[in-house]
Image (cartoon, rainbow, N blue to C red):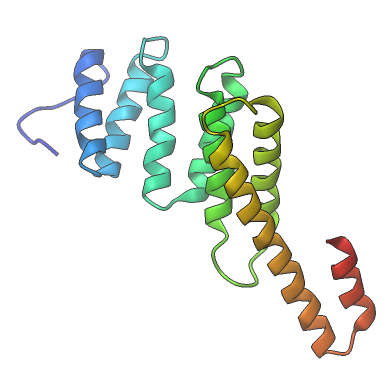
Length: 172
């Protein structure tokens, strides 16, 4: 951070925005997030509060903290249901859930949350510029869910539990 200047919630809104954006553009997401949080907290009804909320979630996303970012995008969607940025938040919440599930054998709940968000997006915002991306990510996510279920099926087959294996295939 720039040690020659101290920023607080009393710092003018535009100064906080410019500083946060510079950090973000430089991929210094921790520093950017701190300044976007100052902007959000210092000016909750200001012109950039909504933007700051999304950028905070974006900072977590780009830092690889996908579950936190997903939660923040979902909070945004709940708190700002009429925002023009709602499609962006839904798409990124779905993607964050999808990316949070990276290891074999992990709980598939985030994948199902991501699928539900993609489905909501496509139902409510089918004409959005993000629709082609969401459609592609949704297809990838379905493939991941199927892969998980097939892995569990194979586990049961190796243990000669054909009834459980059949239930996994039927669930697909």
